[in-house]
Image (cartoon, rainbow, N blue to C red; front, side, top):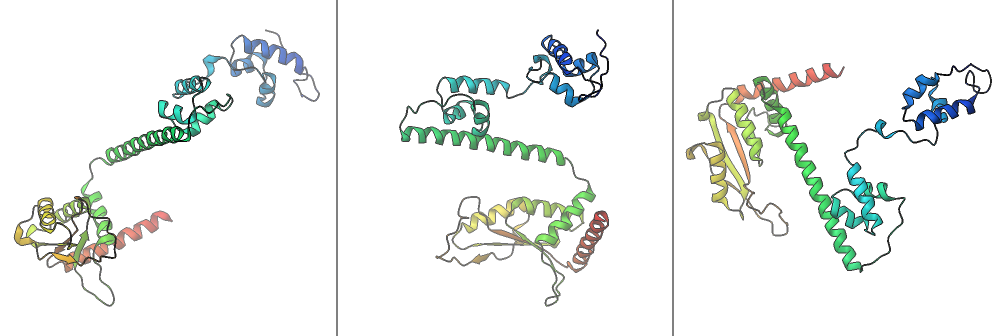
Length: 292
């Protein structure tokens, strides 16, 4: 190994730049990494080191594997064969932005199809993109659900307090009723809320249910749905409230999944309401302390 004598000048102790570059290029072509060249030539200035090997590609063994390398190579092959971005997108299922980045240095193929054919290809490409996005969306939700795991009683308690304070009835200065009423159209919200009431020791005998639904919906089916979901006896359900239909309104909730809303009322709930309100303000104070 040749020792490099420090030389003062524009390059500091690396004054013999051309000589250093000749050695660096030879080492680079011999398959050495940048770190190995640095240690061999004792050049510890990163800026100078990069200038010494400028224009010389790194050896293949130093490159990190990329999961999209195969897609990239296939996209370039198809582009060379004259395929458009839309066709490549349909074939490979990747985004147009990625394809553009991979093949932008290649010549643009001549148009060989009608506008209708091009539109059909573009539509298939967009459908492929939508399918990919939906798959990603479902995977994100699945992973998030797994991450929650099993909740402790304390976690369920705090969740229920927040859920009630967001969706439940609250006393107002003009209406100081301390009533525990919770209404929602989401069956999952009702399921969590009922689990929370059981955690608080609310007996099933203290619960009353009321369905509220548009008069044009399938009322009997909705009543059966909520009865099955809650597992409550028929005498726990009060009279169903029917919402008048406005013919000028274009309702969207007209499918089989529409079951109206369910009101869950806890009888003799004043004491429970005070506990809920106190717990909510405890959460608020704790959040403020944590934030500070």
